[in-house]
Every structure is written in C-alpha cells, then in structure tokens.
Length: 112
Image (cartoon, rainbow, N blue to C red; front, side, top):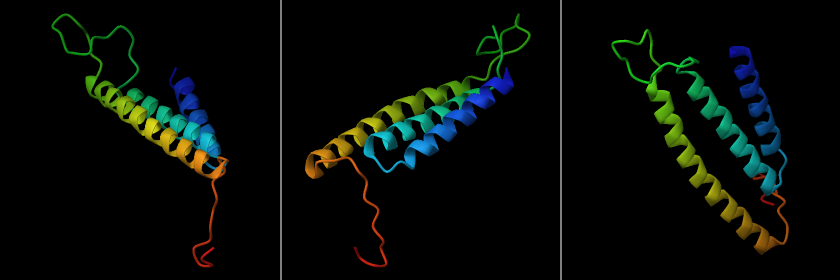
C-alpha cells in the first residue's frame, strides 16, 4: 500500500513539474494543481495509513489515526482552490489582452 501511494505522489509531482515547464498558461495552471494534489496526498499520508481506526483515542480502540494531517489537508484544499481561481483569472486576463496564452520568457540582462 505504501509503495502504491508513494508511486502516485511521485507521478503527480513529475506530471506537475512537466506541465509547469510547458510555457503555456493553461498547462502551468494544471501543473500547479497537480503539484498541490501531490503535496496534499503526502501530508495526508504522513499521518499513517490505517484502516478502520478512529481519529481520536478511545478506551475501546487499539489505535487511532492522527487528525492533524487531515485538518491541514482540508485547509490546503481550500487555499489551493482560491489560488487556482486567481491564477485562472490572471491567465484569462492575459489571454484576452495578448490574444494567446503563451508565456514569454525575457532575458533581464538584455532588457528585451
């Protein structure tokens, strides 16, 4: 189970980095979302993968699941949704202004 989750995190990270390096607005936004999902799964898994365990310690349960990573992931999901909405609006504004969604890389030393 741990190998499967670790592989999924690695694939999401690789896909996110690849998409961020595409230099188009829409793939960059998708890449940031993929990186966000990878980090969320990583944080969630850091609380241990346990099945049928309560999130709090009870008298009759042999173990428990750490609720802190779950709360952190819930907060991160809300923040990433807001970040994605802002990035989409900025990309849409740039597309409407320039007529395409290509990201131009300028060399700061040449001043171009």
